[in-house]
Image (cartoon, rainbow, N blue to C red; front, side):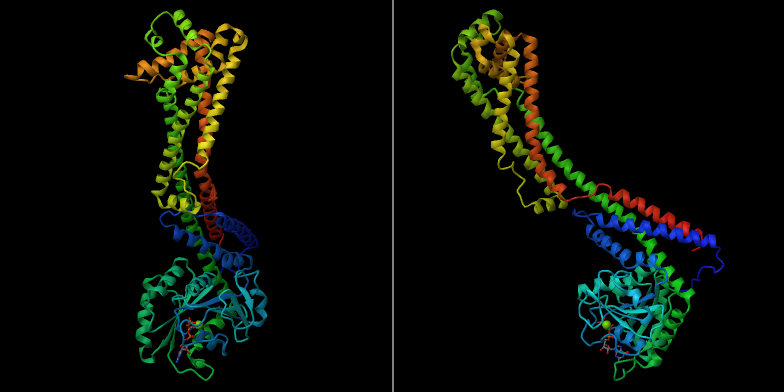
Length: 589
Ligand SMILES: Nc1nc2c(ncn2[C@@H]2O[C@H](COP(=O)(O)OP(=O)(O)OP(=O)(O)O)[C@@H](O)[C@H]2O)c(=O)[nH]1
Ligand SMILES: [Mg+2]
């Protein structure tokens, strides 16, 4: 309040620089408001409630105060009368105006809808486009907290307006939030407390905010028994000093009977009225108040923007963590399926039995070490004319492979779900999805059946194409495309040679038989290539199938609609605001 205004001797050049600076500031803060609007904090990370609150508060303060103030630096100084319920705010406003413009009351809280009193000539400044755009305008008393009643009175000096706000501390949540919003929109706080309540915690929380933001504040110690005025006001002054508000004027209003209109005696409020009228009349002093509060608000918004950038980064980090959980689970499933479909695991049970039926059991396997040409003949003889047995191998492969894939799809879903559930943000995303992701999707079985059959017909095509002009040879005809295809599948299933122990003889042997059979037709080079191709094709198809499973989780993250660059943008904007602030300070505004 003791700040002096800018030097009236500012050169024209400097004035230009200042207004350029404020145009840039206006543009930057407008962008900041947009960026804040788009910034989202949907994930439950520690402290997110405060961040959400801060974000709304910053948008409100930009819209309600900073932006309109920057656009029209000459607008009347808005004095918001705030404080505890029953402190006597409405009575004080009425007494200052000299008529009952805001209804006081014995029931707590009384004021629910703000009342803004201005000079009749200042009416145009207070329309909805200019300030507090969220509040409807009305000319009559209303209990609607979404509206502000405008009262024109020539008892108020031009260039200054008085707003009676709801209380900051009653049980009415809406009152408290509206009061906070209104105080954030004030050029000047007229903070009313009473002899009985001046040490309460809530008002001091607000006053601390005002001090932090260097908002201009005047304090009214209201309803003080006359014999206690000196003592109480001394104590309050000390409290103000230790809390960074020693420059704030402190007024006292002694408790006195009200007149028939419910107004305090004129002399009780004379000091405050005189101060307000002087302030209204002194453009320099008024500008100094406006600038102090405006600069403080901008500084505090820049500071809070850095913090909010961190909060947005925390959201992005959490989202990345949740995505990583899913990727780890499904990559693991792919690796497990890859391993299980190549290490001989599938060459057991049904597949092995059907395959052995197809190639003929017994001496074939005992004679694996014998001469290849002999083996080839034996195989040819063994399988001649049994196409339906090749089909049975196909069926067994189908179900074996499906079981393997399903098992790992289930395991991946369970793992991903459990790791999401282990953090609050993950659990929240799961709950919002309202679908159980702890199991593979309901149609997974049928999709995997289709996938395996597609792969098998791909293997048939591979064999058919690789056959080329050999397709008319006796051997090719003897095994048939089906026979060669199942042989190829069997080779694929043992392609990492991971078969161990007792199974080497049977499963490994089966694969060797398949290998020899194929080599007899295609030659060993070609067989290796075919096996690689079939295996790669299987891996691609499994990956596509699992991607759909993975997508169920990732889609949940996508619905959060988290902008990826909020944190960076906010940081850059906060830096820009600070740069402009320092530049403006240097140029002397
Ligand atoms: N005798 C006397 N009564 C007062 C004085 N100030 C306020 N009152 C009474 O105290 C009660 C509360 O006053 P209000 O002006 O409604 O208080 P408020 O701060 O606006 O309260 P909320 O609107 O609930 O936040 C009313 O009944 C007033 O008539 C005073 O100085 N003297
Ligand atoms: Mg009131």
